[in-house]
Image 1 (cartoon, rainbow, N blue to C red):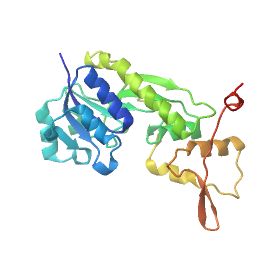
Image 2 (image 1 turned 135 degrees about the vertical axis):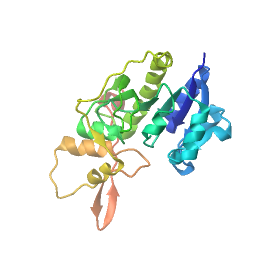
Image 3 (image 1 turned 180 degrees about the vertical axis):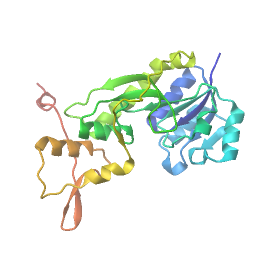
Image 4 (image 1 turned 90 degrees about the vertical axis):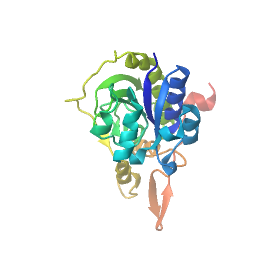
Length: 258
């Protein structure tokens, strides 16, 4: 028996997860995407979903009563959120009988919210992938499964992010059979110490004061945590202009070939 899935997704991980579900023969009853200007891999997700256009919804409009009613009419069994950038309200979360699950590129309860790859480098917190149930708050729902990803000394925000992407896809594929059978565990995050960040939090760390004193490790971590071309990243000011910095890191043996 197939499961009727309401899929809410964005980014490469959203695309790969959707493709995997389709390969398993699962039914995508409806699709929720970011508005066009916020989509990443939107065309690829659309092409893989095979969903009638009337069952495709704008993620920015989920609070509208008529949109919510249309989604209820689909009678989805479960909601699957993958790198979806909108907070879902309780009335939406209550639509699928099995609830909604979310794939997040951090080792919860650490780095709830945005840019977990950045903060794992900056703050030394664990990095990884987590599949969890959604509740009305941001990344605070019961944990289903996790996979730890080690932060290498040569990692930048970009290289760590790419490994987190792959960890997310692999974790979902491994865990989905338990979810679809209703046998997925639930581990509460209540009472666990963690960290949380918003988009604007990077603004307070991006500018480097040339008159300030830094530990070498802290300065290196800042620059590599904000190295993710083509994003600007960390900078200092010179003559009224911003000068951006990026790091290229490699182990000795990778340079010498020994």
